[in-house]
Every structure is written in C-alpha cells, then in structure tokens.
Image (tube, rainbow, N blue to C red; front, side, top):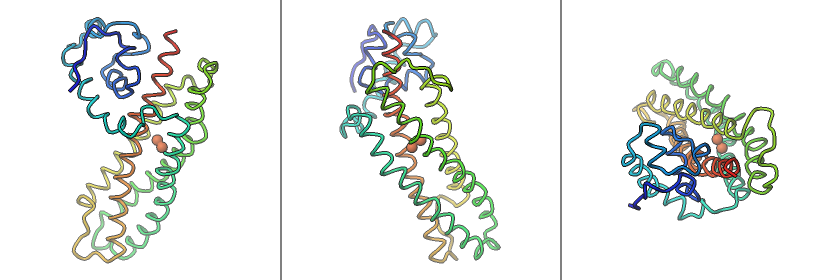
Length: 242
Ligand SMILES: [Fe+2]
Ligand SMILES: [Fe+2]
C-alpha cells in the first residue's frame, strides 16, 4: 500500500487521483477550499485523525488501481463519457423495457402464489421511471458540461443557472444511491434473485435479468461516481484554486 506523506497539500495529494478526492470529500474535507493546505493541518482543523485519513487514502489508491490500469484516470473525458453512453446507458435503455415486459408476464402467472411480486412491480416501476430520465440528463446536460470543462479552460467559471457543476454531480450521485437502494429492495424481495421452485422460464429469465441489471448498474455508477465525477470535481477544484 502506498505511504501517504501527511504534510502534503490536499491539491497535490489528489492530482490525477480522483478517488482520493472523493474519499476526502466524504470525510468532510473540501479539497477546493483547502487546495494548498497540508493534510495534517486540514485534518486538525476538522478534528479528524490524520493517520486514519492517510490510511483511507492509501487504501483507496489500491482500490482505484483497476481504473488506473484500464487508463480511465487519464482517458480524455469525451471518450470516457462516450464509452459510458454506448455501453451502460445503452444497456439501461434496452433492459428496462424488456424486464418490464417480462415482469408483467410473470405477475400474471405467479402473483397469486408469490404476492411479493406486487412490491417488486412497485419498486421496479419507480426505478424505471427515475433511471431513464437520469441517463438522458447525463447525456444531454451533465456529460457535455464535464467535457467542456476539460476542453475549454475559459468556460470553467461560466455561470450555470442551477449553480455549479458540483451541484449537478451531487444530484446525479443522489439518483445513483436511490437506484442502488431500489435494486437492493428487489434483491431482498426475490431472495437474492433466486428463482423459486415453481419458476417457469419467464420467471427465471426475469430474475437473471435483475441480477445482470444489478451488476451492470453497480459498475456503471462506480465509474461515474469514483472516476468521472471525481475527475470533474478535481478540474473544478484546480480552477477555483487559481
Ligand atoms: Fe450514467
Ligand atoms: Fe448516472
């Protein structure tokens, strides 16, 4: 595990390491406000144990290694968002209607013996209603702003009617937490996406589809939260520190 020098300024600690910025933010340390402040001083002012924080940063470095190995920490953001749209957003747009159709069929046949399916319908319809506009908002508004932020230094301080890029990204992160919570609920209602003994092929296919959606959404949202938004937050921090 890498050793963290606790006298290093926050800006230097997080440069090129988006996951570290996210860890500090989650601990309540605002990299933007304390860009030039040494870690030990920032921790003391926030009543945080500097050694514990340094250990969390070092651990996050190891966890981030997968993204670094794939070049995701250096890839131009235009390319990064295109990859997300073409893989994960496409998956969401194709899978949600397909699963909704399957769920209707399964409810018709099995809801009498498996009344928990009605709650699955309610939670899944919430997820579907919220997730489709979410990916649209990312592609139409959030991703283009992030790309422009990287490409056009001059627009970094441009006024946005809804506040800052940070506000937008926090809204997206809240959507992610909500979607993952809805999937947790479906997982728990279906006993971990396990088909019951009387399941027919449609029921089994539905649960396999939920499991695949769960897996893909977790990867998708980790890429956005831990790499894309963290990199964009760094760009914003660097700008406001100059
Ligand atoms: Fe997304
Ligand atoms: Fe998202």
